[in-house]
View 1: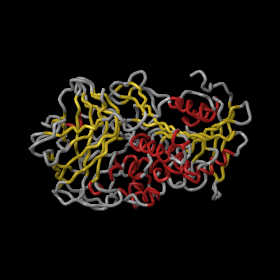
View 2: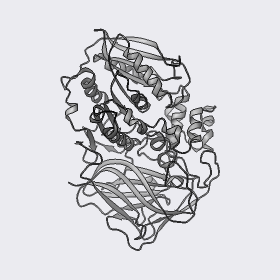
View 3: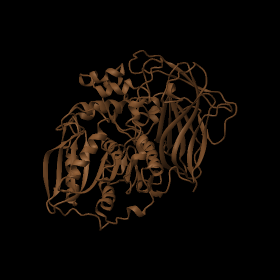
View 4: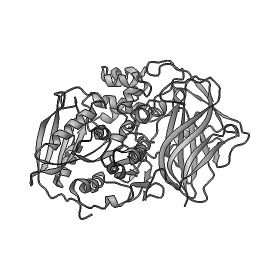
Length: 574
């Protein structure tokens, strides 16, 4: 839009200003300012990833050229800031102190916006409940609300690759731009180390207190609840636009935060001024329209700075950019590859439709007899497989925030829509495929797998994936989920299995929006591991962070009239 702020300003740079915290610790701030003028609306980014990274410098310059002051602050204990870094728990008070300091600087006009992705989103949600008069609008990107259930213990399992990645990143000076860093973060040796709780010593040679505390607090207790965004929604009084992504692991959480703020925000001002948009990408900054094995077309690439500019020009400069005239939700419908506005989530017109598992008892592998349709099962034999934690099913693309190294290849594998057929050749992966679709079928919304299963173990995992099978055979990943048996009923307590007794598992998958086109097929995969995105369940019922023993679990999946296993898909009528 022509009325958006243009890059017409020359800039100046203030390096390593000291920002005092309430406890006397001083944080380091770099400030980018337009040369012309005295005070400006101000963008603030707080980060543990180093303020002088090239991407941060470019971000500061980008905003300053457009008439904004831009402040980038190293988190407590990171790089040029004083203190000791401890993940999450200092970010509320430190964020508020930083906002108050910025608001009182002569070059700030009293209006502050915050943007940032991943941990740069955490700092926004932690600071927002303090309701500083200077914080005018925020733009969190690809970040969760519940640090336990939506991040470190998804479905009760440890989101392991991310947890190791975070431990290394926040405890060292290693950055993603350093030579060899991607190999470090993808190294299977770290991921396979047992017991889990000593992976810090294995990776960097010393204990990391916050990493160990994540394991000590093995259920959703007060340690996690005091930083849980959902417990503070009624204290948040700031407009927010969230950027989510279909192949990021936190989109379901972000949509829940959106709904929660619309319902429980501190004021009408907060409740009415929430927005969210979901792009066809991963946790990382978009690079093109091509991701994994798909190209989403000319509109698939999203310039996040341009989206933020529409938001902050409106809230910080009072420019009518048109953004507040649009419906509050914008989603990219994959398959059709179009953008669409919506007014609510889930969509009011959704028809939640069960797609049932069927087989003659041999659904193992791509070449088995597993089928999928809308007809409830009658009398059918169960499917069986053995899950061996020594040889887990590998993470291959998916709704994942980190890259990994495939066991079957030395290549780095990134999140996203990757062909799953290499995994579907395994005997411990059950494959259920629909007939060829005779007309387009849109699936947009939250997804749940209702699985009836028994295990020989007292604790184990069950996984589910939704796949779009193309006419050429490509089995393109859409959504995945996992549930740890000991947490099948609650994340606040542990309840072990009675071996070989049937239990119901309600597995939440990542939400999606996808048009299954005519000629495609719908596929569901069931297994018991997705490693190293998730840690391996060792099947012993022991302390998952200290146990080193492993045993094979013999799994039984039922699909009959008494136990009708099915995936509940949000079908959108057309």
